[in-house]
Amino acid sequence: MTKSELQAIAAEKLNRAIAPAISGFKPPEKLTVSEWADRKRKLSPESSAEVGSWRTSRTPYLKEPMDSFNDPKVRHIVIVASSQVGKSECINNLIGYIIDQDPGSILFIQPTTIDAKEYSKLRIAPMIRDTKCLKSKVSDPKSRDSANTILQKAYPGGILTMCGSTEAHALASKPIRYIFGDERDRWATSAGNEGDPWELATARQITFYNAKSVEVSTPTIKGASAIETAYADGTKERWKTRCPHCGKYSEITFENIRFDKEETVVGNDKTYKVFNIYYICPECGATSTEDEIKRQPSKWVAENPDAYEQHGTRSFWLSSWVSPWASWKSTILQYLKAIGNSRKMQVVYNTRFGLLWEDRGDLEDEDSVMARREQYPAELPDGVLCLTCGVDTQDDRLEYEVVGFGHFWESWGIAKGIIMGRPDLDETWERLDQVIDHVYKFQNGRGLKISCTFVDEGGHFTQDVRQRCRDRLGKKVFAIKGRGGDGIPYTTAPKKQKIVVKGKAIGQTWVYEIGVDAGKQLIFDNLRVQTPGGKYCHFPLRDDYGPAFFKGLLSERLVYKSGRKNPWVWEKIPGHERNEALDCRNYAQAAAKALSPDFDAIGKKFKASKESETPVVRKQPPAKKQRKKFYDDW
Image (cartoon, rainbow, N blue to C red; front, top):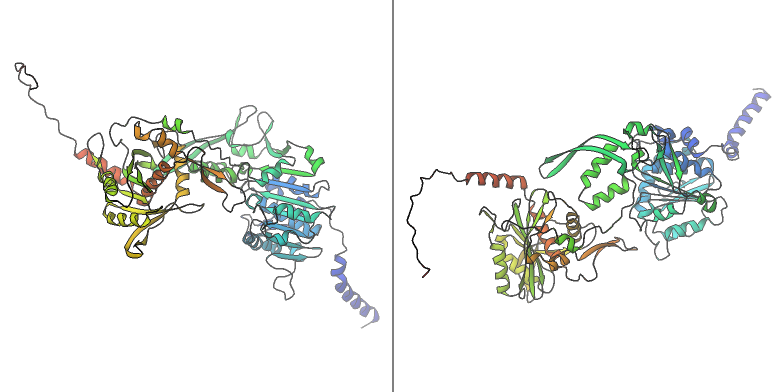
């Protein structure tokens, strides 16, 4: 081998040896985040329905939020977004750009550590695996000396650390150039006892002149939303679309969407068919289809542009009306299915409309609800198919309400009363038996008895209530234990509980546990229904349904208490200390839910029975005339 050939081989070996080191001195390409993503980013099957190369043109509304990251004047970016608009991929593009183009340490905060681990496994790890330029820079997690773990990803020039919002030690130690916060509205209000997690995190950026922070979240509750506050401090930009008729730009909102629908009843459920969907321009009133609107030019319009110069903060707000994946029809159907259920409606507002949910307390006051009272033609109005009774136990009395239920959970107050007497006395329960055993009559004389009774075992007479309910199991009288708190199911299968008298177990009986908060929410949702039909609440025009009843029925409200794990709690309204009417209605409703009556089958049985009882009208011969007789009552 010649000398020159030996020199060439040596040079090649030297080049291979120093190439990794020299590559670190190579200046990054002058790319914006969107240009980097279009050129290098690969979408992974774990997190995207459209696998392959990223295309910013698919979601043009993300270009400006991503490229604002390259603006040296911008230090803080806020993105408020509904579901299915690509906000998570926007975050991933920013992180990928940092690793590949402008390295520095990143702190990425999720609501909880579990969320951080899930995001790392389902989004960050696949992105690194499938994006070639990232895979070459982040060490293989399988190598022995790897700095690549679930919650930490090392790369030349920095490290990506992921954690939950409660981890104060991770938020308040090392200096960090980049801070990312995902789902800000779900964060803990304090990291342990050390204060606001976002403030703790951003305090670590003080030494960096080129620090940047990004907050992203689906909106939640108006007045209690961290992302709402952050958005208000920024440029407050909205994505607006040009009208194909007048040329003016407007934001697409639900109030400007029109549609026709058909409603179909299947069992006890309603299904909908939606058609003729179109958009009305708020400027000129002209109509356009979804396809026409989504093909129009759109742009970001700032309401507070001064925030760019003053604070270096740009803030953006997006709804799913502009999403290429969420059709208007799917959003409208989700809305229709949520009508009458405030929890489901909040999800629609937050994740589809991209709106904050406002707990307006929009239920009318007791005088307005009492004004709905109507004259029943008999004890039972037509429409009632099932009767239940709810009993609230007090130390000196039992309070009860008998409630009728019909198709689609339309309800009727039937009887409200108070039985004075201690719950451990026979005569108190004998008077309750009269209520339970009574046959309630329709106008045609047909009768119904109470199908199930729920009696609250709380208070000082738990064992007495259990014993008396056991004696009445044949009448379907059950003791219940109310349990408050968010997420507790309204009704579950009953469990056998001991009956203890003077410290000795004398037997067992069935006891239901009911989620009283879920029941209250359902009652108040139903009271908001204004038109007779599904879920509407009827009340009779009688003294037992007077001012005291409605004051008790509307005695509580749902309020937001910050700093709690479950911040929404029910509390009594001042001046409404007596809530027995609400409790009785809650227990009667729970009894009906536990029964789960087949209203269709009951209705058909009623109809068949009514037809069989229709009398045959026979023509009578004319009556003979009789002379009048006069006599007194004696």
